[in-house]
Length: 299
Ligand SMILES: Nc1ncnc2c1ncn2[C@@H]1O[C@H](COP(=O)(O)OP(=O)(O)OP(=O)(O)O)[C@@H](O)[C@H]1O
Figure 1 (tube, rainbow, N blue to C red):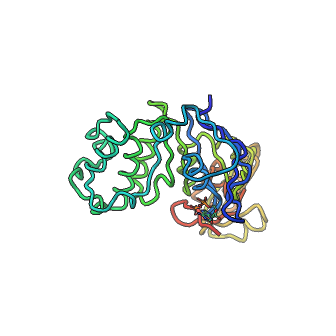
Figure 2 (cartoon, rainbow, N blue to C red):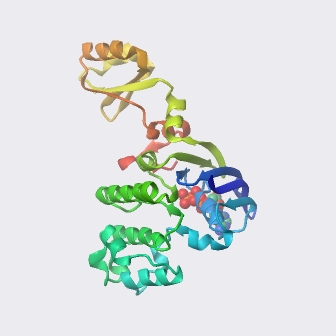
C-alpha cells in the first residue's frame, strides 16, 4: 500500500524545469532516499510533497490530504525558530500547534537533549540543533517523516545515534521515511529504495542491493598494499586501480582463489577481499569523486 504516489510531477520556475515527469511510489513502512547533486531537484520534490510549491502532475497521499501537516513530519531548518526561544518552549509550541500528546521529556532524553531543556536554541551547537530539528518532526507523531539532509553537521557518534533512532522509528513504529542525503553510507545503512535525480529527472530507481548487483553483477574487489607497483601493473593492466596507496583489482567471483594467489605471489600484503558497496555503485553510475568521510563532492 502506498503512502505517497507521485504521478508525472513537473515543476517549472520561469523557464527552468526543476522537475520533469517524476513518478514513483513510496510504500507504507519503507525508507526511501532521494539522491542527486546540487540542483537536481530534491528540495523541489520535497516541497511539492509538502504542498509548499505549486506543481503540475498529481500527488496522491495514503491519508486525507487535509491532514497533511499532521500526518507528515518535515525536518525544518533551525533558523526558522531559533531566535530567542528556549528548547522546551519550542517543543511545547510544536506540541500545541500539532495538538499532540507526545512525551517531551522522553523525547529530549532519547535525543540526549534533556540537560538543554532550559537553554536558548541559539546557544546549542550545530549538531544539537540538528538533533532538535529532528526531534521536532516527531512531536506530531507522524505516519511519514521527511528528513532533508538527515545527518549533515553531526559528528560520527551522533550520526550513528540518529541512524539507529530512525531505523527504530521505522521498524518499531512503522513510520514511513523519505530522506535526502549526500552521504552514501547513510543511504546504504538506512534506505530500502533509492531514487536518483539528475537535472529534475529520475535517472535511476531501485533497491540499494539491486542497484549494487546491477552495477557489478558477480564482481568483487581485492585491495592490498605493495612495495612493487610495477609488477602488479604489468600483471593486471587496466584492471588495477590505485586509491591513495591501496591497490585494487576487480574480478569475477569464480576466479577469487586464482586472484588471491596471484596478489600474494607478487608480494601484495594487507590483502582484503571486499564486496562492492552502494557508494561504489553510485560513483560508477555518476562519476562523482569522493572527499573525506564518504561525502559526495559535486562537480
Ligand atoms: N525558487 C526558485 N526559483 C527559481 N529557481 C529555483 C527555485 N528553487 C529552485 N530552483 C532551481 O531548481 C533547480 C532544483 O533546485 P532544488 O533546490 O530542488 O535542488 P536540490 O537537489 O535540492 O539541490 P541542493 O542539493 O543544492 O539542495 C535548481 O536549478 C534551482 O536553481
